[in-house]
Image 1 (cartoon, rainbow, N blue to C red):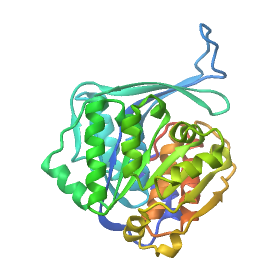
Image 2: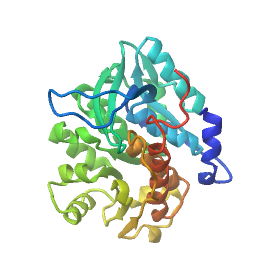
Image 3: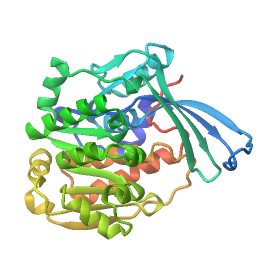
Image 4: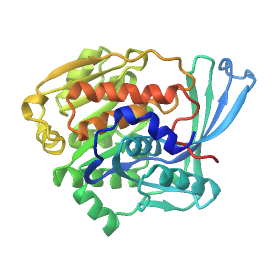
Length: 336
């Protein structure tokens, strides 16, 4: 399916005009996904038959920026892809859906993910970040983009390397200082990150987009309500991804709601403390790869459009549903 036809399927999400402010900035990986379908993941040392396989654009940064672009939100991706055919393939994909690539650098070898998807749609991933792990520089063009960005999304994958993490954190702090919204997706690697880096990221974040496992790691709480309370003591908004159960949008008393209000156009009274449960629409999962990234796109797009907080979770759920009923993590994928 090409980008145009995928965009048509997403028309029910669109508002009468595009998001007209300066581009959103997404810091995250652009990788190639090699997806292999199997019946069941074998035990260690076992064997499994690959029923089919395919190549798709992927990586948390690419997936979310693709979703934002298809929802009419102007955005730029900040990452490095390889100076190779896979890197050119990822660039073609980003350009085809309208993601800005002026901050996408080339060098090294393009990273990739090998995903094994079982008959229930659940996936097991093995990742090589490759070029995406190369630290970027804070160029004058990037400084200017951050100065005017209404929102920055930081992926936890980019916080694994200390030098790269410093750029990501510096960028987030610049956007916050300029009055923009800072969103943070801790990703499954959050437990491997240096605690000081995580704490610094939480201190600057206005929105945390986490699943239940990541919430436990971030908060140190086994109980979900305890975890939600812990995060809301440090950041004003949590988008909690619960898979088949949908999501929870939690708003707390933490300072920072003023930035969300200023950027989204919502009144402060619309952002009072709340727990909003957003059930998911029942769909048959084909491949759950990238569902969390798609959720991020729907959540953040509806926030930027000034929709009420419950819509943030509902749009996130619906975007995730659109990904899991098809092969590959990214919507609007181009042919290899």
